[in-house]
Length: 68
Image 1 (cartoon, helix red, strand yellow):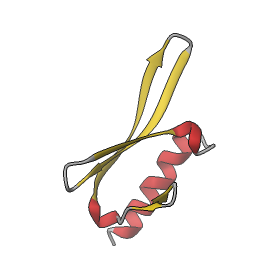
Image 2 (image 1 turned 180 degrees about the vertical axis):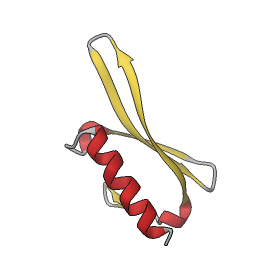
Image 3 (image 1 turned 135 degrees about the vertical axis):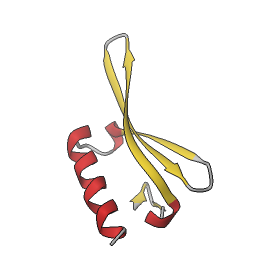
Image 4 (image 1 turned 30 degrees about the vertical axis):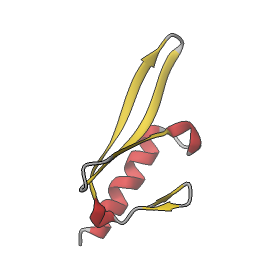
């Protein structure tokens, strides 16, 4: 998976999640990537220009393909 020009091999990714964080006016949404080395990346979904549901479906599809 390449995000903002940074490549993350699926084998290095332990888990992914969509996080919703309430704020004064609405909700911020993030893609959270948990890596096998213990690090965590939190990426604002605003940068992707896609809904959280669509991004989650895409990530899960490619994650399943990589594990075959």
